[in-house]
Image 1 (cartoon, rainbow, N blue to C red):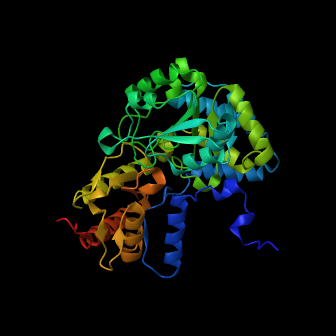
Image 2: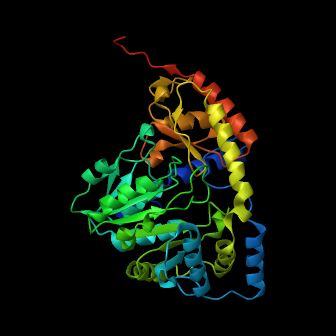
Image 3: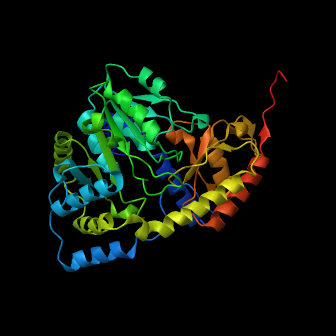
Length: 412
């Protein structure tokens, strides 16, 4: 008789899927905190702010108005119109409501696109570092990930010629985020123009532009790839409200694409989830029609102060290299100087995963290893935490790193 707890009862596709390292680290930190450990969690990709009042009031009113029934799979008509208004106002993009698909978070919107476009054996280009779920979504669709390296010294944006050199007749999709999770890099107009030129010369190629961190930036306003008319119909813009409006638990995201692809995404959702929550949809209308700066300006300014705080503190950590983030709320730091070292207990630090476990258990600071994002010699600091927590965490990290001893070479 088959043991129902055995892994062999599960589908092969699920066994091949990796667990989300970002969620796993956050869960581990929570479990240690429950046991009384003084954990500071800088692994979270979540604003530590409350949803703005104007959005909460819209949700409360929706409940009073009895919005409690099934909605069209792609979302209320008024909601999709609000998305179109937002895309034109903030991004200069013209879309019709039937080109918009609202989903249960940007994560589902991305998954819809991957499953609609990628056939078994198709190649998907992922500039490194990439958001962890891109990789697993492609693998689940039986596609093949092709990793395009981009270094810290390049600002974590791949050279266009290098990217084009990796395109084959099997390449179907490019996926990237700007502002980027985990690096904080922002693709400016010149960067996107170079990418658009590459895409234009490959008519089978599509691009998914993940813009979920759009409103959290510290310099020039991010641009949208779909603004280049020559490739507009082969760009899928994904966005949502989780990060910019502190609505992670509300589960709202959307995609804007050519209507043929939008219809395919609706078909997928119709069989898997149907529409996202009707109350969330009504709240989303209020968020999308609000002037962002007036609603979330104080939150973005707080992130700016925390960014400056974290940068100033990390300057005092020897051997740590990082690219000052232009957007999002992360610093992705190169920890190569601390690899191949020994902890005071004799454990070997081989990669970022080892280092993050050491920091978590030794000094109670939860960070995300770069292994999750395709770079095992980097770690991600989130500054979605108070300035006090940031200051204390860096103090602990600096002390723990100073206790590491390099492994002496036998040939030395």
